[in-house]
Length: 317
Image 1 (cartoon, rainbow, N blue to C red):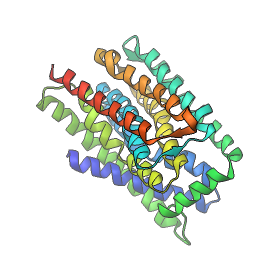
Image 2 (cartoon, one colour):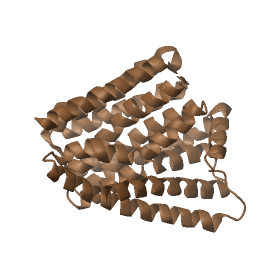
Image 3 (tube, one colour):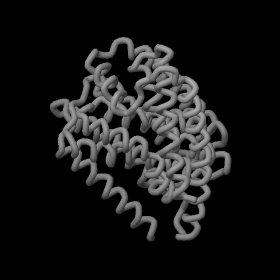
Image 4 (cartoon, rainbow, N blue to C red):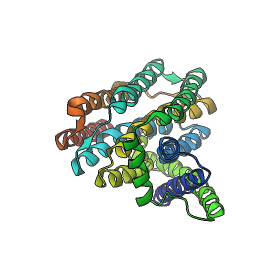
């Protein structure tokens, strides 16, 4: 069930991104708006569907563990691997806007979690923040540099996001197939994750932080590695940072509106502070010469390995 669920989430996200991006482009939506919304948020669709399914089933630990684990993984593991493959130049826009916003929403989540629950009111604040962020991004796309637009157009070409003639119905079917695969995959992954947590006598939080987080982050990993190999740093960095903002504002916003999210005490002791710490660390690393070097990538990767080791040691005790 877990293997099939992970496969369904990966391919469902791929189909959803490809179909919706090509459909949007065929109706004249700009490449930058497609990149900032469809590609970035589409790759986070597995986390969203897992969050919704887990929330409906009352598995708060899986919801929060998945988001916190994915956010740490997106920065420490995925950007670490991407920077090791090829050093990345960091646009001033990311340094002045997206990265500080990621730090701010991470701190906001930590503040909401202090009383042991992310309430429906907290979730509403997060979701309204997501709507405001989405509006601000689409407006800002008009003022982006030609370099960023060109970079995304090249990325579209290599990842088959360019619309073809008379493909509307195929792209629509691909979108629908992606959504159905995501729903099925999310349900299988949540059910199997709870089973393994009971089998190995560990908490749902640990399973959410490790297996579920890694499985739902596969689309971000694939996108960032392809972008890094093609020397398209804006895509790789924007994908990881944008996904983290999406995870907190949208996924926890939607999941918390369905059912208040209980915060396990151990999350406030280590995992949530680790998520905030990783979000903060990326700012000075990226600010230095406006470049994420291979040394920075190795440091991020080391941070992820240390986090995983500490997490497993805590679970064993």
